Image (cartoon, rainbow, N blue to C red; front, top):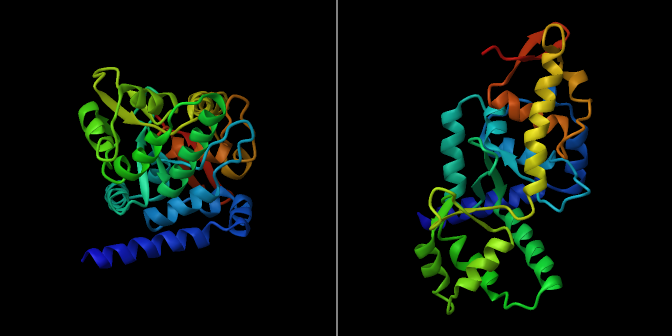
Length: 269
């Protein structure tokens, strides 16, 4: 059974790598949202949204997908949750609780997460001379063992101790690198985090407000999707397509099929 699961996992990873070629990504960026809003399963949706993640010049961040975006594209939310759990167990993705003040969760492919960690370590190497071996311990023993969005201090200490003598300074390094954040309600618990995501999250919140405000000012609180997705947001590093998927999936916006095409409308309270 384990061999079968391993083969399936390897096959999915290989398929994702093939689907994520530069040529595919360039093509996906040019496809309109209306032509690829709905998908049959979660992994297909994840691949497409990863390829369409906006290129952000000011911030070094690997592609991530919001759970709400998946809800906008795979109509059965139970199916999304079930398939995310399966992909998580197969170590294909990780799910992160975002510090936005709302129930936001980000999904990132494990390969992209590993790359994001490497970038964080390189930034530390240029700034300080600390012993950075704790990051190797974190990648080899904590990430594969703990699939939940959070981890307790004692469990973290125990997993890191499997390969070395852990000090509190090591935990501080992981926090400073953006890999962990302390939970406000319990300082002995940490959220796993995506390094360097802070400014993007700020833009996520501001972009949501900007888009909703724009539509609320229109006479019928709606706009053709084909026209709306071409507009630019002033207060977010993320693009209009990213925010539209998010707000449709969270229920703040809804789409209506008309003879002229899809219309995006503010959802009534």
